[in-house]
Image (tube, rainbow, N blue to C red; front, side):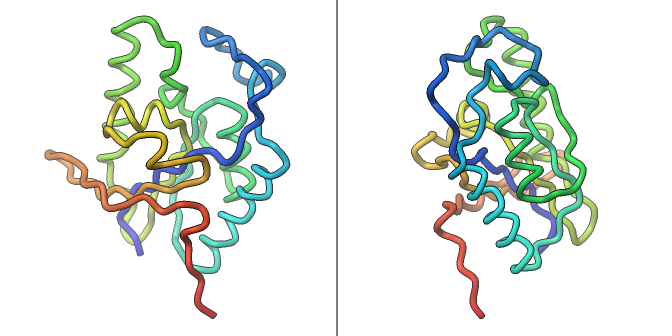
Length: 170
């Protein structure tokens, strides 16, 4: 299975903090809602699922938020590229900045990976909703939404697989 862009929501996060939406110091996890222990386990489980199913991954792109970076690293263990434009759109007040974030995600969803491989994007529900219309309840934490890029046209969304929806036949 290759040629797809796989948009993965970060796994279960700690919701005990009220994040300051305008902060940009993403290396500092102290102000962010990072992964819970359950979320860390879910991320590792996703990596095991992808490995067992033989899903070939070319690049792993991530929002700069700690919960996304940690989901990506725990799942795939390879180098993860932080993409500033994948930051959460929640709390972005500038219309110009919001449009830039939306345009960049739209471009990434429509960029084909290398032949026979897939691109993984780890991000947030707010971004997915603004660009694709997919609601957070339709793509909860830990879910993966599969897109087929069509350069020069519009990407095609196939389906969202919930964390518990992956099947491994032995």
